[in-house]
Image (cartoon, rainbow, N blue to C red):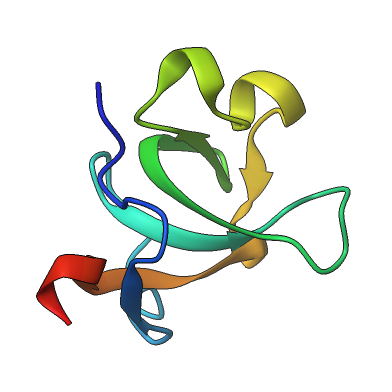
Length: 90
């Protein structure tokens, strides 16, 4: 599958999206990488279970996601991507 966000895309993130509910499967979220302090990830939620979220990239063969670092604690999720603009749309 091709990535939902080509290089150079701009996103708008709602940081309050998960104050009243956890992320749902299919949501695209901004999350902190669990091991690289200043790295942020935009990934799709595969599942939420027991206070943790499993994230997957759209390009299975070239994505760093929960298959590499495991499920993340919910506090690693910074918000839900609510608007995506690719370079051609700006």
